[in-house]
Length: 379
Image (cartoon, rainbow, N blue to C red; front, side, top):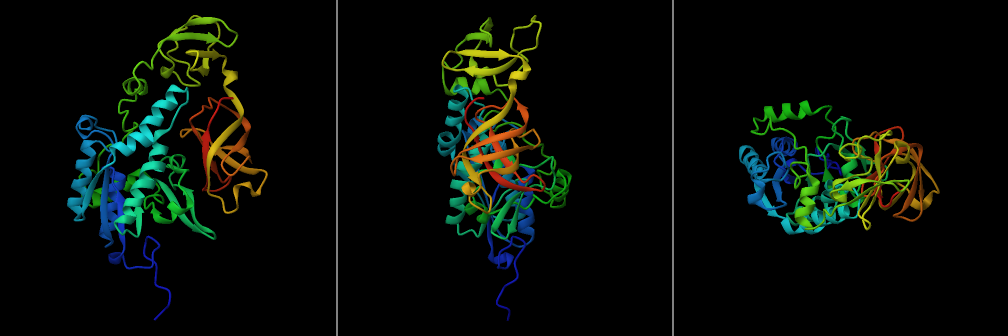
């Protein structure tokens, strides 16, 4: 009898029937397909859905992840495929770990990315620990990203489908978490393949639309959410040109973001103007010409490093970086200041770099993700 047992499709030396997998189910087609495929392969699947905010209020918010209708859809998929499903009330954890910081960051003039904090502080922390408490061997999600075994342990890689890649939102996944996580959809070439798998399993969510908005901002109106969370936050103030001219009034700094051009209410000027800075304390929106948005040096902190060698073992790391989820990676040089802070110098200037956004590190030629950090102050 061989000493080494053959690995199953999740890379574990057990038969599927002896391998318990907790699947984080949002109620959408992606995580539903993951659960259905693993159940079909004979794994001991346990579906878990998180209730992240008020269930009653959520029922009216179709198209937002983890809303009431999504909890129902996840439960229905579990019933269809014959595995147990649990709903966990994470409302207080979610508010403390994600929503409050989102509001405070916006009030401080930053442009936060709450989906990253949710993955980091809720799904891959508290939920992951819950999965271990359930004696799971691993936890699987419907994220489009790849986990590959490297010489020094598991590595994070971009999804095979560039259009679906979610690596920007998962850069803070730690090596320890990566050892326990699985991403069964990361190798698929298109979302059409996922929907085809859902149809093959006869899942009720096969044609369900993708959610587009932040789950607790289902209509995309960030400012209205902030006003509810922090009454009095939308105090009016002045729109000021970088040369000191007062050009008009605004209805609250929370309504503006770095790089914004439309909706400023200061038409009739000779040059197009953009928001180049937010002076929260002075309640001023600073505007200027487009060239003032160009940034070459970006300060980054709270770095999660996923390289093989220590982050500070090199004075410079020539990598590619992504400064917004919708933009392609740019060539850059990363200079460590400590294990968790760095100065990122872009080889070509980038416009609209904003505090609160993530800066994610990539292999220049290839698919590997080397972690990333948070942009923490202005130009």
